[in-house]
Length: 289
Ligand SMILES: NC(=O)c1ccc[n+]([C@@H]2O[C@H](COP(=O)([O-])OP(=O)(O)OC[C@H]3O[C@@H](n4cnc5c(N)ncnc54)[C@H](OP(=O)(O)O)[C@@H]3O)[C@@H](O)[C@H]2O)c1
Image 1 (cartoon, rainbow, N blue to C red):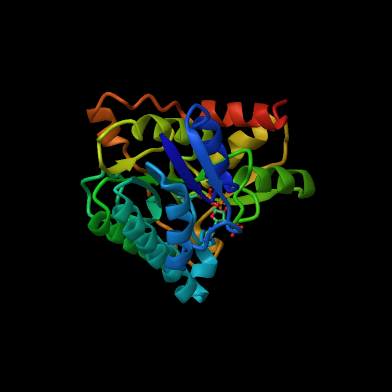
Image 2 (tube, rainbow, N blue to C red):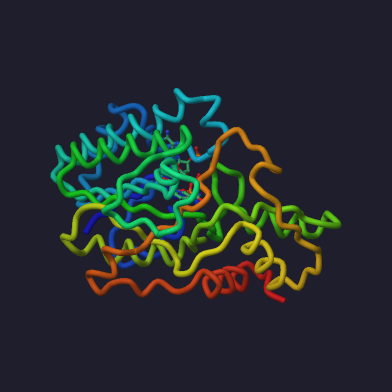
């Protein structure tokens, strides 16, 4: 099987290329392909004639999406559309990566994990643009997998965000006397290595449609930070604050936990807890005390 990975040097793309090592992988960076330009996609796809395309490329700066709405929709919606159209023409499978931020806009008091059968209501421009991308993929490419995930951390760090939350907290934990972190946004942090392994399994199947894939168990950003610092042996105090005390351009869902429901129905949900995954990540990065 020949697999094109778009965004191959990104956080998830890097681990995907590793997880797919026994297949023929064509890694594509932003220098190789521009997803907002359909001609660029046609040129690359026609050259390689892939059996499967994995699109990890996105405009992932959640706050910047609020001020650059056009770029958000151009990359996250039109870019996804362009890939879906050309993949369909080739008759290939398409894996499209989406986000938990398509949920959370209906109520601040929602506390039940979202399944693939719940109706998305996004809260911010990033979520709206990613949902529009999902819709294009669903309607324009028959053999699609839409993978929704959340709070990614991976050894490569997010190219678009300039690192990841774990690395930022470790740096701030060393620099500052105290960290103040929001405790009223709950989600499931997810290690890109675990997500990549699961995607590698799924692409061998015909189980098309939407999948939620996150590590098991949930936490707030505050709890996540406490665990990160504790594993690194840092004693910096962490103070829980509310989202109102930490204003950001984009509103975030209070609760965006995804239930890996479809994986479970298929007997494929062996995702480990985020705590175990984080420990593994910290070990790999040499941060573990
Ligand atoms: N990070 C998270 O916490 C998180 C959570 C939930 C879902 N997701 C989703 O997971 C996916 C992967 O995220 P990630 O953290 O791995 O992101 P990332 O590290 O920023 O990787 C994205 C890659 O896409 C490339 N790219 C961006 N715009 C492009 C364009 N117009 N044409 C071609 N390539 C382009 C980037 O290249 P350059 O940097 O060189 O532009 C980069 O290599 C995204 O779809 C994101 O929405 C992420």
